[in-house]
Image (cartoon, rainbow, N blue to C red):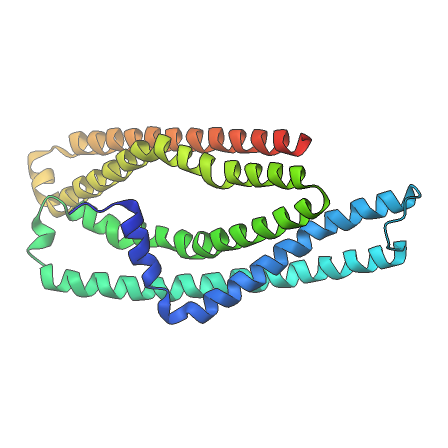
Length: 262
């Protein structure tokens, strides 16, 4: 049964419920950490304006103190945030692997005789491992980005509403529109890569299980050539994914620069 990406993500996010307190702590530390990083630059700008002779309400010593405190807090909070996120990720990976192996025990050994055994191996190894990125680098960073962006929009808007609107548009472009465009554009390549990986695993496992027959009929070179050919196809798909990632980064950086110039 095929389910939409949103339904799958909702199901995965539901697994975080027992560790919601750790997630809240990670988000809180992440928001404060990013604000300290931002205000290092902000205070640097205020310091420059102060040196030029404008009244900013801060002395240079106060500005220097704030920058030093923010710098120290940034390092501590970033480390603590990443620690909390990876604690969540690896706890949930252990839970997911347990669920997968329990299900496999009810299917094995008959299920492993089927043609999709390579996909099952990919599921247990590569696919499950990729969830670490989802739990450690996706859920809380998205929440952190939303909260931090709203705070900065309000902060910038308090000086000039037009600049606040420009900031909001920039955040929406970089945080919503470009990722959606990127996902739609590269989704088929990712799916093809995943399918090729499963097929390669299946073929390799079949070769190992039939090693005696391969030796008996002296078709080892043909099997090896086929494995090399499939590996080359997989590498080509990976190269397309990396190229797509580079294009996305270029577009994102260009939008950030253009919005910053405003």
